[in-house]
Length: 120
Image (cartoon, rainbow, N blue to C red; front, side, top):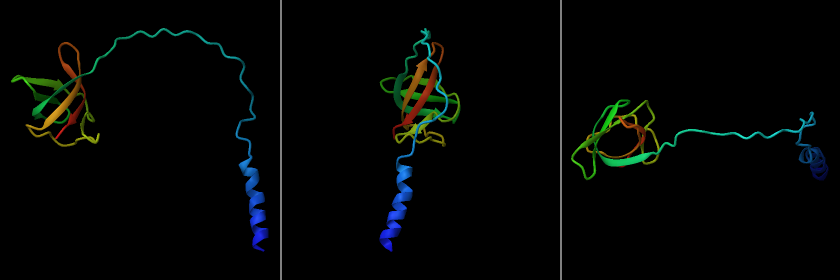
């Protein structure tokens, strides 16, 4: 009895294993290739590291950079830019003195933050 049931189950499963996976729809005609020219500006991301002097979420981060007594300020545009070492978003304010690494783009008149990693 068991042998008959196993045989029937195998007979039902085998057609599924050899089922056709491609479409039987109409094929499209030949395609043509066209060249594309892409123009733009190369954006270089720079890093700065130091101790946070002050920070309010979604505003400006002031960092006392290593090897300098002058604080550097960075513009944060929106949430999700501040993460911990594991890559998880930091939702609370960064305490002064916390070690951070800032990845930013220098636009000439301001440093726009790509993301900030809280090192400690």
